[in-house]
Image (tube, rainbow, N blue to C red; front, side, top):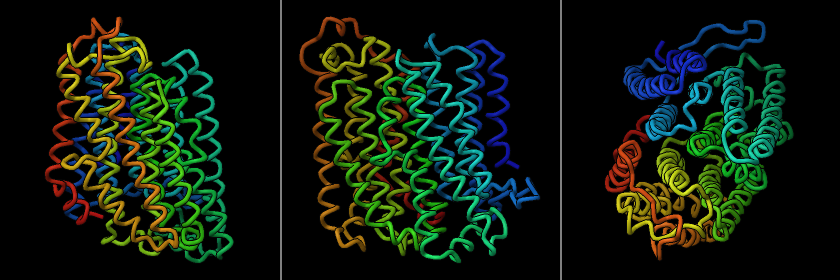
Length: 482
């Protein structure tokens, strides 16, 4: 029942939030996020005892069940969801512009959708939660944000909705096969194995486009920078730290093991698109003067590397000893923590200066040393410096990519490796413009971190350094639970 409570609680508390004032709704958000963390840990304890799933008949006429299951990856994603929402809500405790009950109600509904995606063990249920996570975020984007938020949120909705339709068509096609015995994960794997080569190739394309839009991967990425820039930063956090993981998670659970023939056929295409994403996004980040767009392109580059590694060894993609898969799972968690820290710092900058323009920033280190320390630590983690949490994951991923079964493995690795250099250039350049140099007119009154900003960032920095110094904190768990 605890898996069901993980999803029902944020739905109930989210519905209540619509009828409450902002501060009371904020308390419900904190409660939901704390409960998500505690229940995820409790469910993990049950999983180790063999209690990993729950299943009830849902739509009997089509063989769909309300089936939830938690493995190691699902646990990490549920835990990350709780952490991201909790730390974001803590920062929001004194932000008057997002104290409406509908804001927290929509945030909690998106939390429920995300948890459902990470726990669903039935393809139809997975699709329902996929859509449930999308709808409240669309309203969050369109109601809270910049002056062009309506246009950006409409573009976001069209992209993701078209991808969802492709996925639904693919799910329905699989359900029409003679060997189909239900929408469970096991049934999908068995039915996928019986499909012909042409069918696998076409179905792979439909699924992958849906997941690639969500991550996003070139050339399905154009909605992201606009949406990140125009959305309220707390909403951008949900998009960047969590929703991009939906695409990666779906590839691991619902694509690689289901359509192995299609995966092998499209492997080189996906690898090339992923590496293009890495290099293109890194180059775009270099020329940005808007700090939110810079961080947005940075996220595309990081996700591109994770996607490439998932397709580096298609025949052994789901093997327990696949070092690339282990690295991707570790980096999915790390990226969520790091990008959360980066966006929280951007939120502080926006709140203090009222601008996203890097050219109007400078000299903050002289008057806000605690903020500057947080900015430097999070930035170093973003470029994968040794002894930060990203380094061991990136080392494992590049090792896997270099030894890929692709004919172009070495060339792809070299081009992907450019992202390390480029990330250092644009990230450290951003730090230079924000923290150092002379004070600008509008930065002279920049205040250092308040307690509600400092606590989440300290937690993030501790996590960055703890996993960086001792990655086995997560690696031992990942190896045993995958």
